[in-house]
Image (cartoon, rainbow, N blue to C red; front, side, top):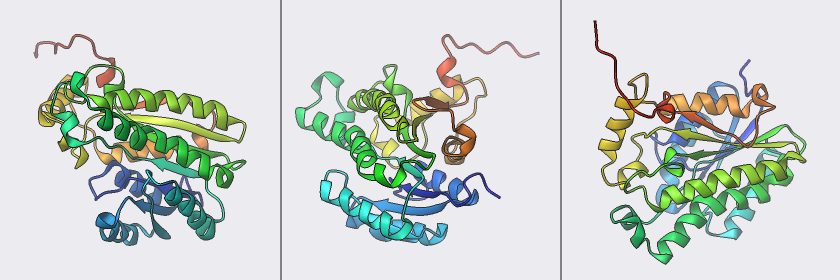
Length: 263
């Protein structure tokens, strides 16, 4: 019997089989969760529906988080298929590509607004709309963040500011939703070779540095994130809320890095 046996999970943000959300969905399925997936636009529909078939998802729904009507429609769809919900995975982030290719000081007003709305406000909007389906069920909301929320990562730019706001949002939502028996947490994952990651200038150097500096000298996988997500959304983590859990082989603990001489 899996850790999530019978739990109903809505997973947003799958773009392809390299997405972090895909790794989470795979781990959830292995542990017995029932799945619903979302896609943001018609361009992604066929791809996400194929992944849904692969993972045995019970439905896929369109949800552009910039449209309140899509979020309301998603709630109706989840209610029709599942009746209720125990898990919401928010794996959504976006900033215009050009915002990653110039100094942060030149962030545009429109780029900032879009990045914040998609990457941060969407967590609030989804949590609020789906809350009636989740309350009183030992439910869990999970989002994805990154170390660029805490330290400067050159060219991560406005997304670092968004992730800082997202982590604060996790804490405020955790406080509000606790009275409804809903927990809210975040996973801070090390860089991964996702489609979105390659929007960041110098991503390969960032990945190489993170892997070299962490104590294990290893790169994480989407499966590493998925298995941590299983724990955080399971009853084993019932007393954990408002937290940011790092999946980075300890990269975030390092200050000065120097390997001891061999031999």
